[in-house]
Length: 303
Image (cartoon, rainbow, N blue to C red; front, side, top):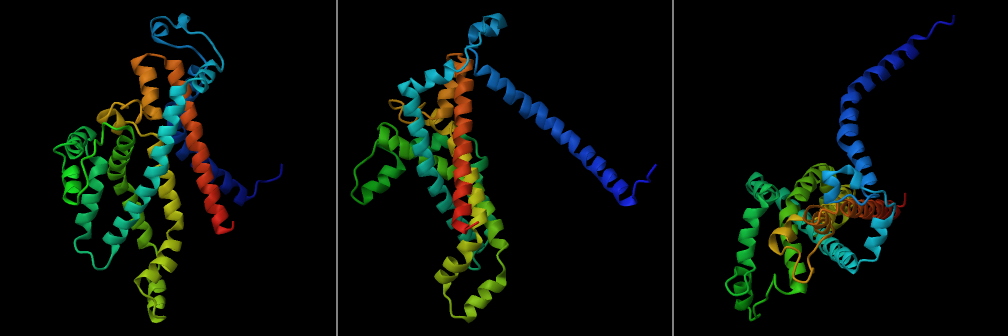
């Protein structure tokens, strides 16, 4: 028999050790992600409802009927439009707020940057119910602080949560306020990785603060910005708590998101098969959107 080289034995031993370390994590992923995902896919192909909860024999395989029903439902298209509006408005605003806050916190002129990081990150971990109570008062058409401020500059009161268009804006602003702190922390980490020598060289060439930001900081933060954009996009696509607590999807379904529709189908009307189909439509939307973001980033960098 041919002797196995020592290098090959070492590689096999390292591979077995690696698989041994990975096995618990892979088992957890399979148990808590892959199996439920396969179960949800199967569920979306059935008419599983409250009657099937009592007796699984009442669940029937219907194929793509749940998906076809969604396509034919005008409410689904309204909800899809609402969700896309949330994404189009919320993602850029969140990125701008996160980047602006990170630049302020990371600035050499900032004092107590740790305190500012805590203040900006606090909304991320704050209970939404408590936040909703405060923001409801802020948005109050007669006594709200926001309308009071607008009145000081001659702008009449706005029914933030009662008019469909303004309700969409109000929910988006609340979502941005709650989520931008997470992106801010990531941007701060990205700023700390920018070599200081680049700024020193730019200073020697006579560059000002704006030129350093435009020619050094922003290009160096492109990978970080893509990462934050993908995270924020996934979060905004799954927006649920804000419209559920603030408006219950109203007025006239103007703020009903796709996740809120999924919740109502699954836990209000007990149409679990329909809710599972909505979940996979949302999964496809997130997958396509994040793929486009990555493709645009690669195309922009010439890769």
